[in-house]
Length: 415
Image 1 (cartoon, one colour):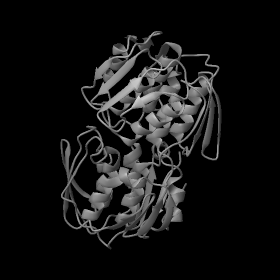
Image 2: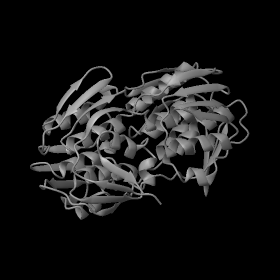
Image 3: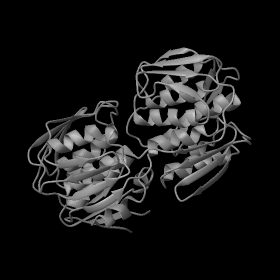
Image 4: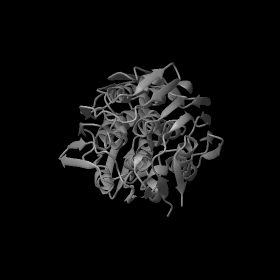
């Protein structure tokens, strides 16, 4: 297996273009099943998770072509409604195929999805929503959903789950009548899925708010669509520049999606200038600690950016407190940061980070996607050599992270 070898101490400087959003493109690719025709998706990042989703689509009978960040999917000849177990186990986001396959074929067979082990992520809200649309669900080793004549319904989510919101939207597009989702997730990726579905003839309103309305249509048509930039990747590069005392300009971003991260970096002493699609981040030589980072559903601080912010705070002046409200195992990177000299104490969902003057290079292991990115960031500021193992997790969600950091001046190589 490969690892990153990092010699710390270099300030990041330069321009970086942010890739398309992993958490937006995966449900959009799943949605290509619904129109029974051709979909052209642009700004698709080169990620392991994208490769897995395309393998799944191919296994179902879709024709798939991927080159230069553009994907063409022809779903006119679906030959299977069973998702291969080996592919399901690779990726959590395979779960969004429940809604699209059910809506297109009336039946879907799958297994419980895999992905990063960052905590319990039950799919009960997904299945409850599909049942309210008229699907019958059986779970005997496999998940089997059957519903050839779905009917719109009013669905109240107990929690604003992103995945459940997406699955209900996908299943309801071709259902008879109107579906209303209350307490829907408000993440930008939900609005992007609405944009894609509407581009091929769906009638969905309200994404980005707590109430989404889907008026079922009889059929959809071919489409072309561009996926939004990745706000988590952007937040990672911002935090990396801050941690190294650097100055970078990010291109291809949506500033509105990044305000929770912007606010914390400003609190830490960074100067940030923005326009519609670009941002300049200039950091002091040493950051100030931030009082509190509390992860919450959007528009709160994203759990996917918490490990990276924690890595930046490890060498900040003062004490920062983190409260992880989304995933109970989101602190798996902390033991690895401690190996590098970080001063972090954990009590349940609360982590207290006392900034130290320096970190030291060490051999550390990425145990999940965002935690792996945090370890790379820690390596950028540590004295000596850091080796980050387990980078297959990182490749699931970042497009050429090592190469992009190298272009900004980092001393990082893959070995």
